[in-house]
Image 1 (cartoon, protein in one colour):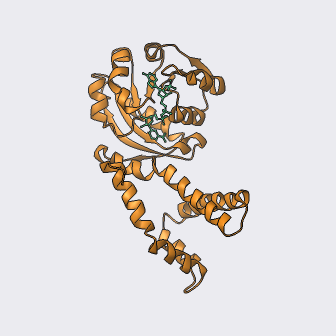
Image 2: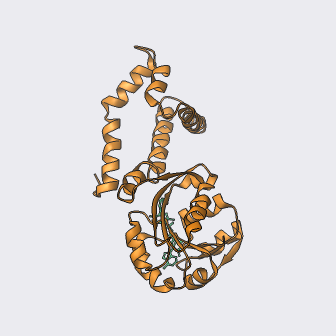
Image 3: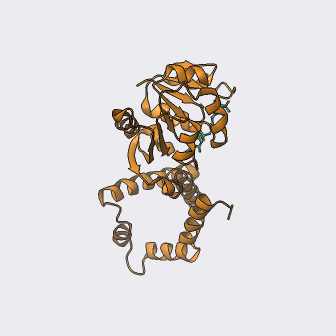
Length: 254
Ligand SMILES: NC(=O)c1ccc[n+]([C@@H]2O[C@H](COP(=O)([O-])OP(=O)(O)OC[C@H]3O[C@@H](n4cnc5c(N)ncnc54)[C@H](OP(=O)(O)O)[C@@H]3O)[C@@H](O)[C@H]2O)c1
């Protein structure tokens, strides 16, 4: 399946690196498409229309605000569309590409290292090609775990995985800063924080997401972990993550 990327920014780069195969690519004029194909192979094309005409699947990797203008350029030329546009329901993409098969995904940046979570919000107008949905989902499954979520809940899912990559990075950053304040050098603190994050994620995966069980294994009554956890609870770590999810789903900055 020849992949065409409209947009060559952070998400397009992560997807292309994860797929590790040549792509057709365009950008809004920055030259990032050329830089991307210099890395992964393929061709940077001067128009979105050419990407659409030559690709079997066009992955929309521009910003959501560009939906209508890009559709005006490539609608009618494109064989199938996979949208990764945040906060854009599959129905809105389908309305911009009437009659064209459309599938909605929200990947997170770890797709770059094939450890991604790809929220799958469903498809529209795929009836004409029964194999298409299977093939496109399989393409994204090469990048990590594809998690089907009903389209109205995709933003709620994005608040955990897509945006969650930045949230977890902030947690690691806060841990590094805290380590520096307690005397560690930044390099050592970062090695500890990132290694702990990766190891904890792997362990939770094996334990089927049993966070409470894992916490109990680490926490001796009245011990140092218990004191640290109490400090985090006192400072409202749960409320902070809840506010972040609400902000993603319902808008507003706080
Ligand atoms: N970043 C994430 O973690 C993440 C997660 C989930 C979903 N998404 C979604 O992925 C999409 C891209 O996000 P991003 O973070 O990759 O943004 P980004 O880094 O700003 O990249 C956007 C890309 O779109 C290109 N572009 C803009 N207008 C265009 C046009 N008319 N024709 C062709 N290309 C055009 C830009 O061109 P220039 O290079 O010329 O500026 C740029 O290469 C968004 O819809 C976002 O909601 C992102």
